[in-house]
Length: 100
Image (cartoon, rainbow, N blue to C red; front, side):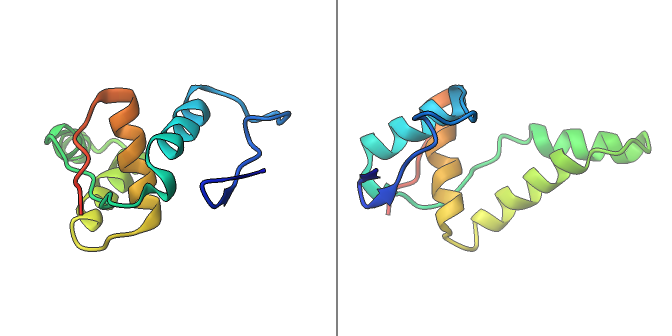
């Protein structure tokens, strides 16, 4: 099914179900094609603190580190996946969405 110009099938009859999928569908329903949203993911500093602490403890934290790097990258490049993540963060945590 096409919705807002995108082919959407995941929530309908798929084994892939869940809260994040529902929030993704709602984000696209609220802002078609995520137009007017910048793919900026701001950081509160907790991720940086976690990665720094993991390094001090010589503990692996690759997923958190990559997520921190993606947040930094989002400050430089406006990407579609950044828009999706920004919209999702707004849906589940009320995080600010930067408008174009």
